Length: 156
Image (tube, rainbow, N blue to C red; front, side):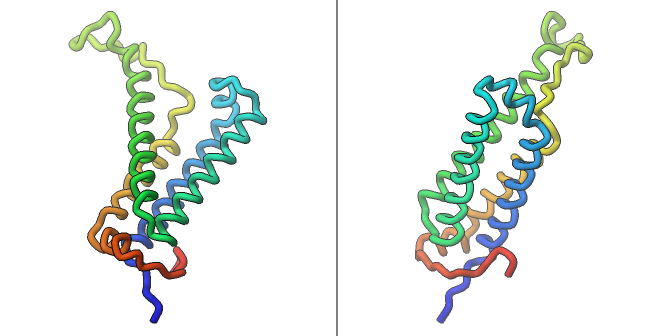
């Protein structure tokens, strides 16, 4: 008898790949600015991105197909790092508005919005958090604990 994956795992896959798509699109749009910021050269940066893509697919495989608990926790750590990075970028943009003005006389014209902080990046982080949420619903937790594995696809 074929054991089907729980709905939470299927929803995780959908949101995970949606967030991954936004991440790739954001990277495509901001490629030149990020290469200039990191100052490693395009070939090294491209190699870095190949590693990121490989890690993303490995985490998906071990969560959604093999039901490994360690991959679930790796995903929550990476999603948390995404939130921390987003908050740091927003903080970097807003801090100049508060400098020399205090809390009551904020000078919004001084705000410096980074060109790499886009709606695409925000969508990537939000969808990644939503995907991570589905890993901690009751049916997903039970499935991982029992190690029930099947080969349903994300499009079923």
